[in-house]
Amino acid sequence: MEKLIIGDDLGRALSQELNLPFVSVEGRVFADGEIQPRLEKEEKAQEVILIIQKKQKEDINAYLIKYFLLLRKIKEFAEKTIAIMPYLPYARQDSIFREGEPLSSLYIAELIEENADIFITCNMHEHRKKIGDLFKIPAYNIFVFEDMAEKFKDFLPSDSVVIGPDEEAKAFVDNFCKNFLAAKIVIKKTRDFKTGKINFIYPEKMAERLKEKDVIIVDDIISTGNTILETAQAIKTFQPKTISFAFVHSIFGDKAIDQLAVVNPKKIVFTNTLENSYYTVDIVKSFARNLLEKKII
Ligand code: R5P
Figure 1 (cartoon, rainbow, N blue to C red):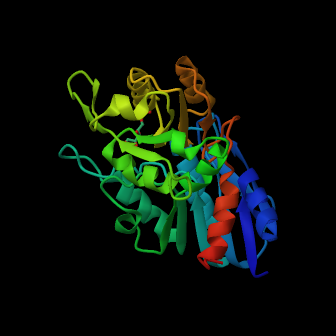
Figure 2: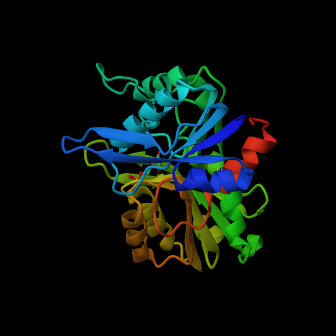
Figure 3: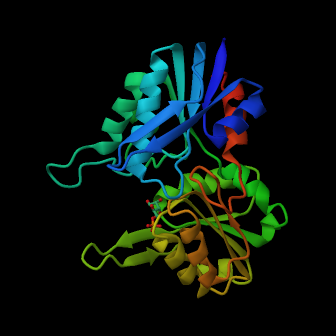
């Protein structure tokens, strides 16, 4: 067999998009926490694409071990492996903040490239390190804000303002506005390291620029939800008409989304890079498109 996709429900969907054969992964967790994934059947293939999504109740480290075990298993029979991790864990540990810490993002990349030939992820957190700084194998960081902007087709770009909550979010705002020509604002975020309190520094004329506008706050990750919620609460004081959110990865799944209700959002758009029940942008379509457009397969 030439090409084969191995994975979970995302893998099955990708195989349908690309019209390629599919083998699913099943597995069990033993009482002591050890993980034993298993390929439903062993098929020899020249090129294998492995895609697995982290499940809501799954521990992030258990997900990583499962992924590594499968990559290593596939190496036994495939000539080439394309590893797709919709969300790359540990990418935020991209610097040594205190002496003695491991540079975890780099070490995780090293473990992946030990057993893969190509790596693909989606909106990896690229604050201090770009994907090419971590991986020596060809690696692709697929941006999906452009796809998320499609979900705002019922908004008038001329009445809308797309806001990034910190300077790193400028790239997200630009990608979102590629075909959605709204006004853009990037806020500067500082954090008091003692109290943890976030402080925002705004560009000029915020009140004038936001009053009665449809505001869309965009970010790559929501984890505790504090950044995006505090941004929304601060933005509310400028009296916009509506507030919406667009973000890629919802680390705490449904729980993180539920808490956004306090600011009465008009729309919340996000993906299924991590398992959740409410996603509106299916990442599989972006992966399929990019695999073909970038001639990876
Ligand atoms: C920060 O640099 C990221 O882009 C996100 O803003 C951050 O990870 C969100 O985390 P939380 O939801 O815990 O505030």
